[in-house]
Length: 413
Image 1 (cartoon, one colour):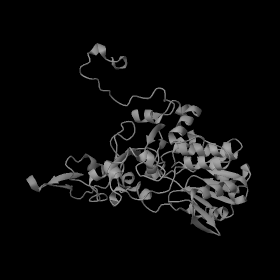
Image 2 (cartoon, one colour):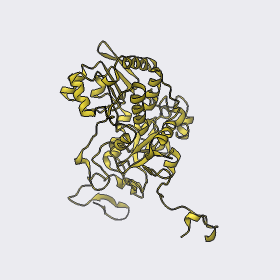
Image 3 (cartoon, one colour):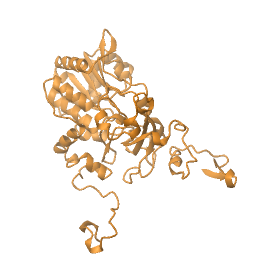
Image 4 (spheres, one colour):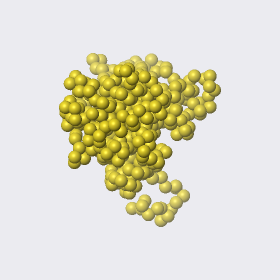
């Protein structure tokens, strides 16, 4: 609990004696402080607010899908703040989401594709990595290949993985790993599912076919040598000691990753993949709300898309102004990587933007019918199956010069 101590111009804000402000939502006081007296030690003095650009996105820390805003300077996320959405998180976000979901975007990145030669991973170009992956996959029978989706990736990326597995490779062993932590959940916002898109991945086809194997059977198949190739969209896939020894016996291991991880360290090929903050897409939260998110950090791949999102300082600074630029990584969204890999294997997909993928999803899956990025933005998210009748998100302003009988029909009564 907070209180005021002293009087007049000597007033300070402190906690009550014997208490601490240490609950998982304590940093929301920063957002509601009317005079800016309460600040975040994590962000304080790092940048002037007017020197930053702010972009809307979705917190990937759990299945709630809190709406947030990413503040960026020098192409680095400096702070995350809650964004109002009365359907999802109202005005709030938890402290772990505020403090933890920018670290892996800014630091310790896989910035270029990696190919393993003689037991050592080397950086290489995209053409070589894609060509090598296609060559490896052609040499394995479809029933000996397994695909692991990712609840951390967007619906568009999981959909293209499922489509690639079934239509290009002809495989049916498709599943994902779930990340459940009951100790994280509370009765406010935080949920036990520590990923943003488990439900969305399932909705777009990340599940074994009738003849396919689920993730437990896939793991057992790797140990027994029945699975010879593994294609992994999930860089966080746990690698236990027995799995590590089994993975070493795989003929092919391809992993999408944005940070070096245990599973990526074993891979023959690592595709440098964009984080949530570097791509456009959709997540589906635990309540079935489909939400659109935009990139906040510029990469070589998304620079054209980001042109309208960057602040004027970012766009018009001179090249010797370090704070206006920052590194442009060579990472790509997984849907674009899979599109290019499909082409290497003789199948052409005409996806220019992620919006082309969501348009195809809307035609294939009833839950996404009629959904577009513009509609999702206008309605602050839309529930699965309600694309043609989205739930109203609040009041609509009617100009004062309209008489009651002139009001639109839907506003009467």
